Image 1 (cartoon, rainbow, N blue to C red):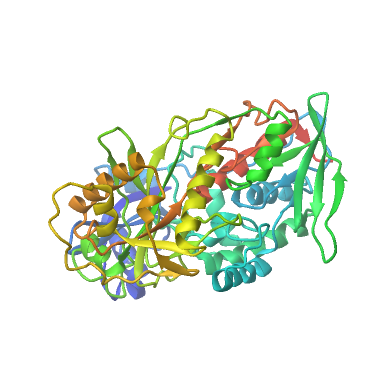
Image 2: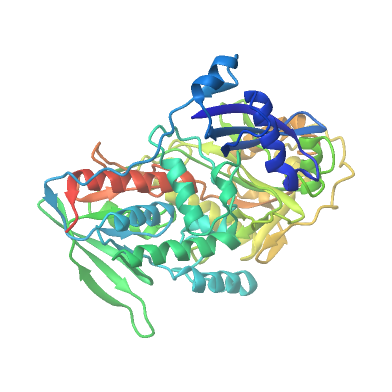
Length: 549
């Protein structure tokens, strides 16, 4: 197969209509093909090139089929054109000697959902347990919480079908190295379940909450069609362990009446609980499942007008033919802490993402069109066990809770908001004050859930606040207006990743035999894609050791 890299097409209003025609013309010219020669091609990657802004180009990598490779390569010189062998993802054939009971997957976030999906396709008939509701009813619960503040502890932005990723920006890029093709397989499964096909090749693939909800339902239907089961309002409250191995789970099933506790017998359980299942972490610790505290990060959401980000990244107003611009920024504060953007949402919303009463956390979310007025991103600061004064495996959870309690207190249950100018002056007391700039008070927040102005600067410890300001000022030197006084901050962004890592061996299992820690909650992923890929990897490990029942 012939692969062509770096085919450039100018980003302009008519490109969407003429993309196929323009690409075909470029391919013919680059490969020196005859005018009437027939061939087909597949876009492998498409990314924006804004290095010469305001001239913006799309850069394509394509694979060309239906032509004589040897003849083409004889007349082509240079590295832009090459012959490649297409690689396809392959799930391992079950070759283990053991036969397990039906695997039980705890959690239906990306890790649990994709693990269950792969196992279902290959005959394992998995049982998926979700403490929250199905995504259809979950959406109603979340909307009700944003309107009234009435929180359902078991069904919210953190808990429910699809996990925390359902109510997020829906970005599908990852930094995880992927020699086995799991990343492409995740995207292909999303497309098969109804996601747009361009996520297969877009340099910054994105779905959005409105489409993700349908995609998740379709994945569930596929799991059930292949003999799997999905149980909602079903929380695992205990593990049954005998001779160092799993032999069952105690679950609490919520219904119209009182919750009922029942035992599910299994010798194979996948622990895909997500980063916010704090009560489950406590139970696992009590059951002596080996785990440790790990470094993570906390910070605040920063909102800017999307037009400001567009101008900075494109050198002009975006128009209708370019996507809302994004950014990724990193810095190191004087004390050595990393400060960086996380879960950047172009044209998105800040959302109240709380899951515990009396505590408040925020996240970022966008719909597929990304047409909100503001861009927002978490600007987060790295923290370690030294910061929260404990190397206890659950010490990071208590650190998060204290920050969330303070955020709830200063917002009186609403999302607390503060202008960056006020935040900076509170942190840098006594330093030279040059006065507020003209943006102060002019930006309006875009928040799902009630909000109010408050002393956001009082949520984090002083050392984190200082690092946050250093980072913002550094980013302001890269992106004009990024550190303007009118920028809106809200907090606390405390659920960036799991503060716990549950140990697992090379075979994917805990020291407790048959227990497979998986995904973001177990400390092995950091977003939709990496969690989904870890779910697939866990399914592969199960297939290598166990035969379907």
